[in-house]
Structure formats: C-alpha cells, structure tokens
Image (cartoon, rainbow, N blue to C red; front, side):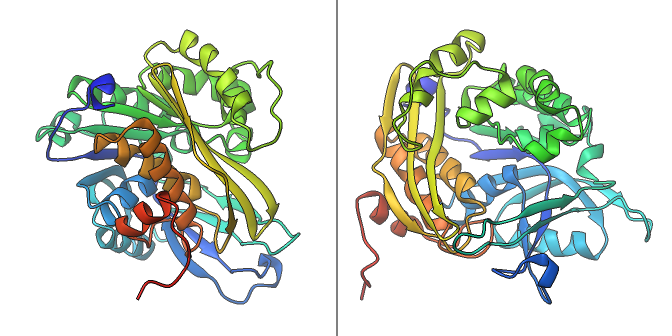
Length: 360
C-alpha cells in the first residue's frame, strides 16, 4: 500500500494535523438542563488523530493550531503534552472578558432511547482567526513529514480556515507527505455559514489536494454535493451504496487514491452495530460487523481514522489497515473522552477477532 500512496519511509514527524483544539464538557448521562457537574475532555477532530497515533500507536505526531494564553488554554496545552503530541501554536492573548477563546463543546452521552445532544460555543474562537501565512510550513516540515491531515470541522470555522487548509496541503505535498482530509460534515457548524452550498465551495479546493478522503455517504453528498448512489443499501451496515459513490468521487477529484468510512447502525445510545469499509486504487475491503456496548461514542470516527492511517504508514495491506481502524475506533467508544486510552496490543487483538475475556 505504501507504494500506491508513495509513503516516504521516514521523517522526523510521522503525521502533522491542522485543526482547532477545544474542550468538551461532558455531564455523562445527565442532560445539561439538569447537570450539576461535568468532566472536561480535550478534543478536536483533527487533533484527535494526531493524539491517537502518538499515544496508542507510538508515532511522532504534531498539531498546528491556535492557543490562547489563559487558564483554559493552559489546561488544553497540558493535555496535548500528555498525549505526546508536539504543538506548533499561534498564540493569542485573552483580554479577560471577550477573548479570543478556546472553543467549548457541550455533549452529553444520552442513555438508551434518549440520544446524545451536542451543541457549541465557538464565539470569538481563536482557531477561527487562523489564516494563510500564520504557520511556517517549511520549518515545520523541515525534518521530514510522512503524512498530513486536516478536516472539515476546522474548514467550517471561518472564511480563512479553508484557504489555510489548502495552503497546508500544498506545502505538505511539496514536502513529500501523503495528505488526508476527513469531511466530518457538521450541520450546525455549516448552517451559520450558508449550509451545504457553502460547505461544498470551501471543501472542494481542499479535497482537490488530498490523497486520502475520509467520510460517509452523507459527508460526500452534503459536503461535496456528490450525487447519491443508484445502488440501494440493504442496511446502514451495507457498504454497497458507499462504494457506488467512489467512481463519482475520483472522477471529480482525480488526486484521491483512497476513501474510507465507518458504518454504524445506532440501536440505542448505548448499543451500536459497527463496521468499516475502505477503497484504495480500485480495490475495496470491508470489516466484519460487531455489536458495541457504548460508553462514550464521541471520538470513535477519529479513532478509526487514526488506526487506518497507522496501518497504511506501517505498510499493512488494505484489509489489515481498515481492520486496525475499525478495531481502534470500536475500543475508543469503550472509554471516556475523545482520545484513545487503549494500547496497540489491544487493538491488534481485537482486529484479529479477540473478545472481552479477561487476560491474566
């Protein structure tokens, strides 16, 4: 697979992500309107991939992002260090009243038939102020970089974040890196900027620079205005409809060599059926479907992305790479927070068909 993608064998950094860092307030199964306490998780769709690769898969990763010099920024920076991710920050000063701020995500877990609820406070967000020219990509990539990653959440934040992602992708390709982009279409984030039409206008120039595209059917349809499949899927776990769209994706974005996504059927807030599928250079691979008991669903998709990227960086077959992503994403949903708490041994064991039987 590394030959198809032309992955360089070494580099000072295995992966660099560009995105926004946030803190997520989590009251557990209690709805926010009745909550009396919350846990704080540090997150960011793009950062999570770098964090997972560093902590679970022991790769050298970095994140380019905004950082506000105030206590919430300090909390977030401490968690970045704890996950082993090298930061490249553009620093901002907080005025003590209005910001700029590190964004807040509010997300309860739901329970049973009650779905999780997610909403945001991204007012005067520092990351939304990032623009082309804010990072010295030549300096960041000087020691060699194997992979560059960004995503649609970051691109949605402002008029300047999308062009910054394009700039970074081009610089990464010039440095010899494979580039990946996770569409991560979020209805609420794009609604305040003009909806799907705006998303398509912003995302298309970024995807044009990507070797790997991550996203499901909805992401492709809403984020890129790729027409829906003519093939009817038997269920949400059937990869046929997703695979039927690949031809349209690569016709419009010929640089794209691989597309991958998770397949999820939500039975309840605590019970999901989980699978994954990937396509690479004309070849497809799908995982088995497993029934998951969910502790915290947030971060499962980023967990899949990290495992899939790791498999490709490690020279695994497409089948093994998508299994590693599927296994890691599944395991991430069994622990609190948005980033990994599991080990590579656990991921490989689950990918081989392991169970929850105690290991003594």
